[in-house]
Length: 120
Image (cartoon, rainbow, N blue to C red):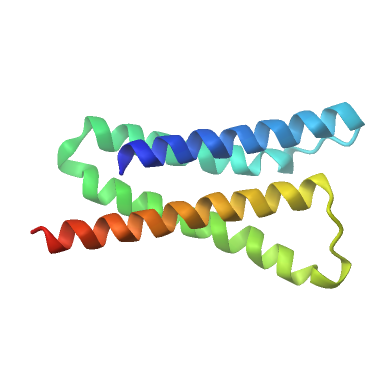
């Protein structure tokens, strides 16, 4: 699971950087475009720490799931709140990508936790 956290973090960092770079290229750069990158940094660090601190792995991965769950809920709520005025802009695509990536991580983590519990 730590490797999955690191990969998910890298994907989120890329989503944030691409979104920000697009904003810079169009002259509409906003620091909020980097929000997926901030979540990605946290997930990658938690994954790396879980690999290096075996005794804290369980706690760090649970923290990672909380971060990913928040990373799913926030953009999803924002997208649903603007459902009537939704246009496929770079911001919407970035938010949808972040929500999707975080949801996949949460599902994989739940499967991993359930499997670990069954194998105990």
